[in-house]
Length: 213
Image (cartoon, rainbow, N blue to C red; front, side, top):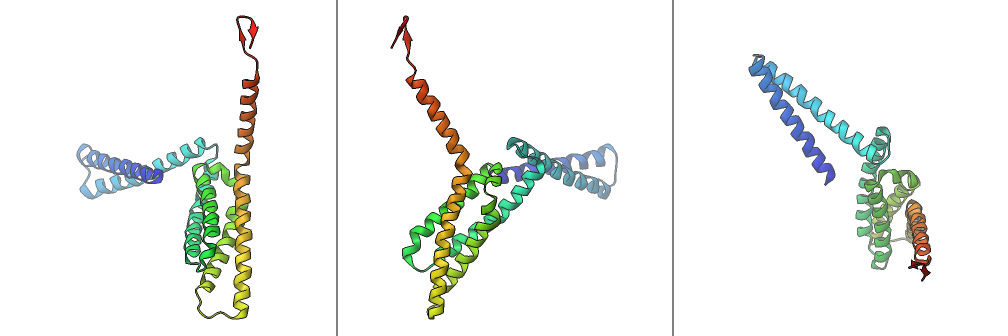
C-alpha cells in the first residue's frame, strides 16, 4: 500500500510539473505548441524521478541504511516475493493431505521473514543465508516434489525420490525457522533486558514518610 501511494505521489507531482511548465512556456514565453509540450514532458519525467530519488533517500535514512544498501535490499525483496509466490503455489499443489500442517508452518515462517525484512530492511543482513540460499533450495525442491506427487503412476525410484525430497523439505523448513530465530535474536535479547530491568525496579523497596515498605 505504501508503494502504491508513493507511486501516486510521483505521478501527481510529474503531472502538475508538466502542466505548469506547458502553461508557462506557451503563454508566458510564447513558445510554439510542440516546443512547449516537449519542455513540459521533459520536466515531468525529471520531476517523477527526482521525487522517486527523494523517497528512496528518505526511506533509506529512516531505516539507517545508505541509499545504495536500500536499493540493493529492495531488489532482493522483489525477487524473494516472486519466489514466495512460487513456494505457496507448489505447497498448495502437494497431494498428500497429511503434509498440510507442516507445509503451512513452513510457508508461514517464510512469509514472516519476508514481511519482517520488508518492514525493517536492515534485517536483511541478518537473514542473508535465507535470501541467497535456503529460499531458493526450498522453492526448487518443493516444486519438483509437487510435480512428482501429481503423477498417477509412480515407480520405486520415483517413490524414493519423493521420500528424499520430502525429507529435504522438512529439513529446510527447520532451517528457515532457524533463520527467523536468528533474525529476531536481538529483539529477544532486548526484551529479556527490559524484563530484567522491570523486575529489579519492582523489587526495589519503596520509601514512605521515611519508612521502607
